[in-house]
Each structure stands twice: as C-alpha cells, then as structure tokens.
Length: 375
Picture 1 (tube, rainbow, N blue to C red):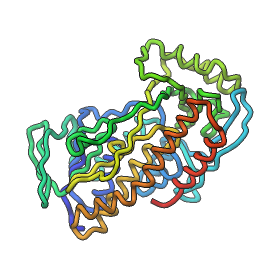
Picture 2: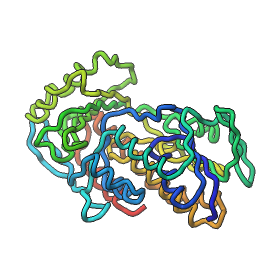
Picture 3: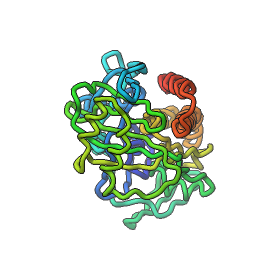
C-alpha cells in the first residue's frame, strides 16, 4: 500500500501501538488524545507470552524487560499456602524471554508514549474529534481545537466508553457489569514472590505479580452483585478485610503491608463484545472500543495491541483498497477476541458462583493454548 494519511483517536495501549507500527510502514499518522496529561491510571498489569511477543514486534521488548519483570509459570496455591499446581507459560517471544511478566501500568504507558513520540507521529493532546463525514475516497474530521483535516483512514481506539463507536455504530451494545470487581495495590516485593502467584479461595481470588526488582502488585477479585460506589477512605480496611480469611503466610505478610501509600485502585469489572462489522467505509474500531474483557486471562491489553499489529499488516498487504484491508483485519481478529472476552467472562461467572473448578481449569488451559497460536 502506498503511504496513507491516518488518524488515530485515542492514546491508550492499542492506539499508541497502531501509531508506532503504522509509522514504521511510512504512513503519515496523527494521534489525538483527549487527556492533555496523557495519563494512565492503575497499579500493575500482568502480561502473557503473547503480549511479550507483540512487544518484540513493536520494538519495545528490551525496554519492558529493563523496567518491568518477566518470569516463567503461574503458581496456584491453596488459601492456607501450599502450592498445588503451576500453569506453564510458553516462551512465545523467543527462547531467551520468559513466558510472562508484569509491569506498572503508568510505566508501560510511558514506554509506549516514548516510542510513539519517537516514531514521528503527529500527537495532539487535549484534543479529540467533534464530527466526521466520509465518502469513497476519504474521511473529513473536525476537531475540538477548531482544525479540520482529511484522512484516508480513521482508527477509533478511544476505549470502553468510545465516542467514535457511538458515532459510527449507534446501535452497538453498551458495556455490561460482570458482578465482580478487582482491587489492585502496589507493594514492596517479598523475596519469595518470584513469579505470578495466586491463592484459590472459594470466591475471593487474590494474587501477586512482581512488576520490578523491588515492587509487586496485588490483585484481588471479589463478587459484588451490584455496581455500588465504594468510598476511597475505606479502601485500606476493605482490601485488608478481603484477605483476612487466607492463612497463607506470604499473603498475610502482604496484608500487613497494605496502607494508605499502597496506591490502591478499585475497579468494577465490565465487558463488551461488539458484533461485526467493526468498520464502516474508511473508519475502523480496535481494542477496548469493540472487545473489552475482564482480566481473568491477563489478555485485554494483549488483544488490543495485536489489533494494531494485524491492522498494519493488512494495510501493508492491501493494494490501496482500505475497506478490503479492514474486512481482512476483522476476519483475522474476530474469533481470537471473541474467545478472550467470552472465556474471561465465563471464568468470572464460575468464581462468583464458587463453581466447577475443573471447568475453570479447562477454560484456562484451552484459552492459554489458543493465545499461544500465531496471530
């Protein structure tokens, strides 16, 4: 494909990844992000081998390994401590790279933002679109800063509550609350926490993952039948309370560390799977905009970043037929993204109900095998 003029709306993980990869191919890329501070909130994020493989393709793997943490396997433990299993994590990014890892969310956002700037993309912060119209040859876009520009392709990557999706596909489904919430916190790393470790409580599921040489992040899922507001002043006591019934010595040491400086984040878990098509004419939606998932497979960021890579590949393969490239993109992405969203949702349902642990394990195994496949 000859060089195209491309607009990306949204500066999250998938939008930044698209900018980086499309600039490698010589396209003229504009990226607009409504948040003038280009901030990314949150504690840590767990990443599987497929994500590390995508980092290698983007060119950020070495920086991630220097600033985050990578290790093999996921340890599964009983509530009182003994390890009963370990999930294997194939080395998908190469024999020299562990099969999984984790990093602080703001650190990963900074790595991607630095790479986006270095790519030469035209970045406008504190700006988004107000209106777009398209014809067979391009898309005219008006912006909140008063500018008007024309593009060969527009990519909507503005997240779960996307304004691009609302404008392009007004009948698309809305995000749905799952009945579960997740707590996250950043803590000093215990020496015995060398890789992702989880304790399998009946309904509450705590886990930790190292995010650097000195820090780890705690994640705890809990059933919450209704999506009610939780007062941040109660975060420390509530999070400590969720861990009270676990006798595992490491988990009790973690519980004792939780305080007001632990960067606690509480998030109700929502999901979204927009039926195809994900594009209309020369406008396409990627990432959480069309397939937001709960974190049970640690693959939400992964499939959004993969979207960016596959979209760039299909544009490169196309003979200047943008709609055909978008259709090919959707054809490659639909089943994989559907699997992650629906299987993650089912894992959450089993946890909420205290359901069949064999089914839970079977879904985990089959999902991880599917994620190991090439994109």
